[in-house]
Length: 168
Image (cartoon, rainbow, N blue to C red; front, side, top):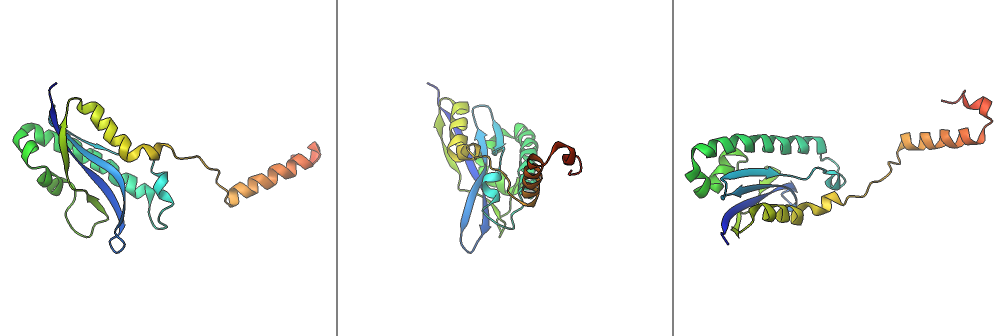
């Protein structure tokens, strides 16, 4: 079996530096067998929407999409300079994604290894970090709009058909 090199780093959302609490939101994955870099993230982020009152999921999703777009640009650069691809993973992150500061988005330490099937491994790693995002349970919103619709439907069910046209 031919073993191929890979490296990856997890993108984390760090809501507060003070409490050092973070949640995994993406993976920057380098596949050396085909000289390819990919940024992967879960489709649904609703799992983290309830964690912090002032977290904008729309803003976070926008950042994740920007990371994915930037990764496509980085891929084109790396195709011209494959040596950099192998040797400067840290530098690629620092120059193209995030600077080290008090930012809420941070990349983890780089993890690396060898595998015979990088595609299967990448899927496995993604599932290890993000499979619980897919298992989110749907819930019924029980806000004012929900209560109003429930009230109107109950009221309609109790009234004589002639009067239901008066109610929305």
